[in-house]
Length: 510
Image (cartoon, rainbow, N blue to C red; front, side):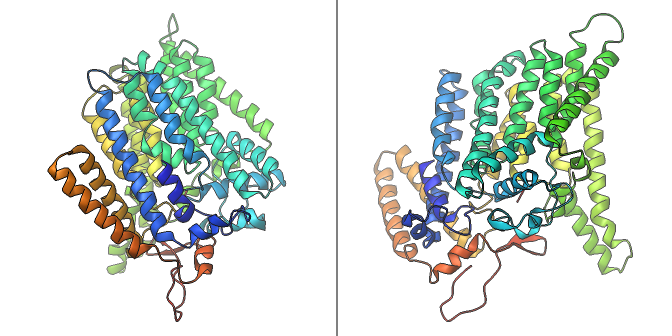
């Protein structure tokens, strides 16, 4: 994790200017983005390998205790708390939105460009004029952080990262008890649901508000199963007032409430009780935040920028085919497929709700949220965690857990630390870092003649890489400009803008 954090200092989602001018070393690191990316990729590969190995120990004859796993979580997460943002620039949008609320601006009608100043300058161009989809719970916290830190960008990032870390800690605290009530080994639940690389690099490293959402989601489910359904419903409502997808959990918590009632009409009474608590909590929190209900109309915001969800990809392919034949309906193809995807997700959720007694409400909820991610109109790697948390707590050991773990390992390495799509050079540097990590792992595992040969090969490659990469960027301004330049959308894929040719070539998510 130290290597990943160190690499992020040169290749993370960095602000346009060094927030600590006295620390000249931070400016120097930016001049070597290649070695920084190799270092970060090396550390990320080791993290994924260590997590996978830990999973084998959890499933072994002498598994680590939940307490030991929590210590491991602390050691892995600590370096990321003070590292630059990585894998996404969303945290800058969060800060700008918090400052907008504090300034009396309507974040459901205006984008960060309205705010102006140093905070808005760090928001990618594709989100500058985009309204926020987040609910009043998160905006309350973002506003508080922005009020305390002002325009001190680094302090604001740390403040929001502490909010995200609190969500992860809440999840780590409640997941073992939730797993026990679902008949699942608490250590196995912690390994898949909390020590997951996606949790560490995106929720902690990226400071995403999904951390708070899944923390409240886990707390609400655990509380409801502990025979406190009203309080559990309130916590789940708070999760939905961070990010709207958590509202799905309210439908699945009603059966838990019904199972704790006596007499007739238990399910209708439980649904009515869930609705009353959810509406009351929403009205109270919204009044406290003073932000209104504009987030309901802004829920399509994550779809506004280019993304490659299944429904969006099908829509683009259909649009291209229709344009070839000159069909007038071609512009509507993407919208059609997105609505079709939502319809499939809704149908899957209804089927799972009807089978809640057979599957168990928590497990059914996890599958329902997974269907929403798979068939919904927008997708990011960390969205997988919405459904993974209930699945980690309720799914028995078997094929689903193995496939979920494989998906997490794969999704952990598909985005560069700066949050951009890789060019050829960046892809090569990332593969070099991952390859060096793989050779090191093989050399350690095979302490024999083969291991010595692997070690020699590893050292030669490391020396070659150092000679190839340890050269400063030709123009320091290009590196300082990298984070501030707006994203361009070319063929629906986000790339870095390419600078105009110069005598000495240089190279310039939600």
